[in-house]
Length: 329
Ligand code: HEM
Ligand SMILES: *[C@@H]1O[C@H](CO)[C@@H](O)[C@H](O)[C@H]1NC(C)=O
Ligand SMILES: *[C@@H]1O[C@H](CO)[C@@H](O)[C@H](O)[C@H]1NC(C)=O
Ligand SMILES: *[C@@H]1O[C@H](CO)[C@@H](O)[C@H](O)[C@H]1NC(C)=O
Image (cartoon, rainbow, N blue to C red):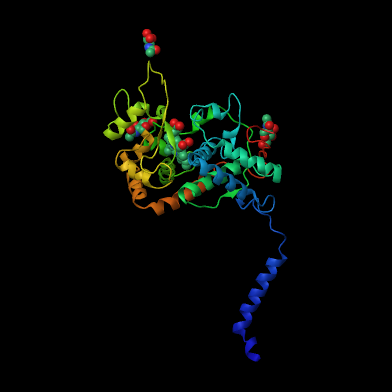
């Protein structure tokens, strides 16, 4: 009996006792407005519902996974992840050169939002739906899973000029890409890692036509260039007559994997902004590493997507929860 009260046991016992008491006595904790599982109380099925629609749509058309991941990027780089890219209007972001005619996956967001408004009206933001949809797309086509914080609120401004001022154009070189991503708080490694999203999806000829005509870009594999020229006709009088699409990754176009980097090693990067990552000494080593270590790349990709999803988010009482992702309330 006496042994139990030896000082050796007594001190830790009292320490534990006081710690647990202070935890119990603390007032209810205020949860942060931006956190993993934000909708756990307010709309428990939120993430499941988005996942359900992504699965359904992507099964029918794997290209929509690429569309959703790109939509999230185009949202976050312009006014932060506030769903400004989803707003309709003659002078909205949708009408800008980087977006017009090339956005995909909007119908997935609409389907998820419609069910969420029935189940939990006015609760789940369009910005979070888009973030979840991009995350679930990476899972569907890349087996890449990550948790994302939520609690983003929707903005009410979307300006046609802003995508061109914030999104990198396809003709940028490695240092210009680095500077562009740095302005959004993303590192050189994160820039190269996120470019791996070009392991899925398509590009219109207009995004790389200057690499084919009037002369073929010497950093483009000649056979690949010949193939591209067969698909993309030369401009007539300086204007593109037809504008077909080509897979961004010629090896595994529907799998989000590191084969994109293997393509860069053999001069099969489709955009100037892709091939420059291998040709510039600034980023070459990162490309070689990503090409060799697929699992390490996937881990970095997940972390960089989470980070991109945190750019300039509106939280708490900022912004609003849109009823319809196409318009402000
Ligand atoms: C590094 C700078 C980047 C540039 C210059 C760039 C540029 C482009 C261009 C020009 C296209 C083709 C658009 C078209 O012609 O239809 C495209 C497609 C795409 N981009 Fe990027 N991008 C960049 C980074 C990113 C990032 C960071 C992501 C996402 C994490 C991303 C995801 C995608 C996806 C998935 C597609 C295919 C879309 C589809 O198939 O619908 N890109 N990008
Ligand atoms: C990259 O592009 C910038 C401007 O866009 C230019 O000033 C710079 O010289 C280019 N760097 C290389 C290595 O070509
Ligand atoms: C190209 O432009 C020239 C002069 O502007 C014109 O004569 C010619 O018909 C045009 N060609 C086509 C195919 O539009
Ligand atoms: C936009 O949202 C802000 C709150 O973030 C609000 O003060 C403002 O009145 C809204 N503007 C429009 C046009 O809805």
